[in-house]
Every structure is written in structure tokens, then in C-alpha cells.
Image 1 (cartoon, rainbow, N blue to C red):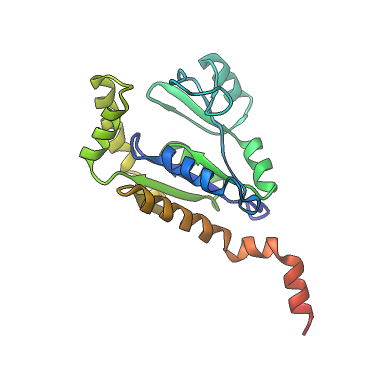
Image 2: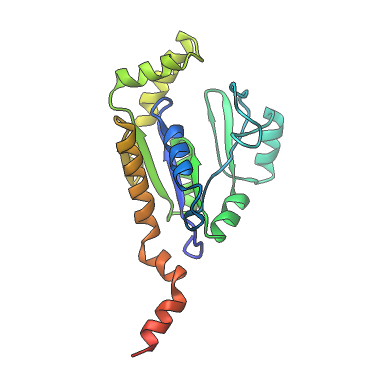
Length: 213
């Protein structure tokens, strides 16, 4: 990981905490700035597309058989089964992107995060929390996409997911969206300004400055 110019960020959160909205807002904010290149990794999944989701843009939608074949081929950086569906991330694609100096954001759960951090310890893990359990349930209900039974299952899973927050180096409470977005941006900037990354970016400058004495 030390040889990769880009930064790898993991964002995990219970469903309804606003993780996807925060990532989307950050991408839009930096979209026109070529000096701040960043991408969201497109994962593979066996779940059915939700309304408005596009294959290859939001997820690579595959069958369970196709996914299991990809596991056997060693394609995935990490993979996990959540709510009866598989989710996985291509390692080759991520490493190629990082080598080009582009920051990559992984939208995965704690199981996937644990696998990635074991393989790439330099990864920056960020956990997004809701301001309360009631707000979380209300957000899930307001989506209007799931039955009461499904929402109850998601709430139970949310508590299990949140119990792993301490495995991440950063925690953001998404109460006020603008504040949470600023917090996320601050973490990204901090990662980019680490000595190791700055040395890789500015080695010619450092050689010039240190060689001028």
C-alpha cells in the first residue's frame, strides 16, 4: 500500500445512516477538480437492482452462480453475504486506480472492511452513525421501499453492524448532513496530507530543496 499514491477509504454504516448520500455529495463537490480525483468502487452483488439503479454504475449485478465462480477465481478483494445476498469488490481494479493517484471509496460492511484492512493496513476506515435509533428507523421507513418485516430485519442488523464501529479509525455522526459532509471531507484531506503521500507527490521538489544546501 505504501507504493500507491491514491488513498483507499472504507465507509461502513447501518442501512439508513446516510452513507451513500455522503459519498455522492463528496463526489459531486470534487467532480470538476482534476487535482482531487476520486472514485467510488463499483461492487458486484447478487441482489436485485432497486428502482433507478444501473448495472455497472451502481453495482455489477450478477447471479449467485456467477458470483461463486468469481470467488473461486480469486477475483475479489473482499466479499461477504448480507441479508442473503453476496457483495464483493475487485482487487485488481482498485489497485490499478490507486496506482494512478486516484482515491478510491469502498461502500462496504464491517465484514468486508475487516478483510480489506487485513490485506491493506494503510486503509482509512470511516464508520457513519445515525443520531439515534429512532431517526434510523424513520429514515428506513421514509424510503418506502421495504415492508415492515424487512425494516425490522434491517434494524436488527443495524445494531449488529454498529457494534463494530470501534474497528474503524474515524467515526462520523450524521445528524446534520452538511456537518457530516464537512467531517468526511476533513478526513480525506488529512489522509492526503500525510508525509508518506506528500513525499511521493513531491519527491522532485524535496530533492531540489534538500539538495540546495
